[in-house]
Image (cartoon, rainbow, N blue to C red):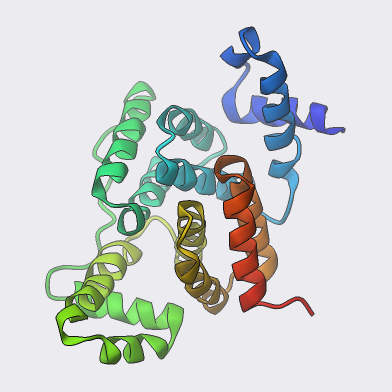
Length: 251
């Protein structure tokens, strides 16, 4: 199949038989979009459609492109993702984009779920309590990043140690410990989130190493960042790829 045929097949798989409304006003633009996103990018690399839709959801959440997010919630369900997996992907954005933007995205998810007669709330994926969230989060931090975490905590100025505590207890304790998605998936989604923000190259580099440590190889990282391209544009994609190449040089 050529890319036009591929795009038609993929669009039907993701969104059903409907015709994009943009064809009635901007058919040239819609063709460029559909043929590139669904005829090329969706076929590039080693990701399956479930991984691709999870990545799409978190990047659209980070970008706050909410109408497109709503459409891709439906697409995610169509490719076999569960409501639990979709919710957890969006929840995972919180430490990197903040609560207000995540709440905006959650509202979109819930509207789609209600339309699909999915019962809310989804079964809780919480696995820690007030006594364990810090230690559990710190353990996952160390698993992802290694001994650098202890050095980072030890070297933090006294008036900033609370930030290191928040990283362990909140970012990793409250979110990475949750069920619904495994650690490899959460870390892959995280590098897509921070790559989409722009200006977070230090964090992108850290999460390149984190992804390697949990078993996501360079091919997978390139595939994931490539999948972000239609939603974030070339500058942020190229910056993220430069981080990958710096951390994992070509042989």
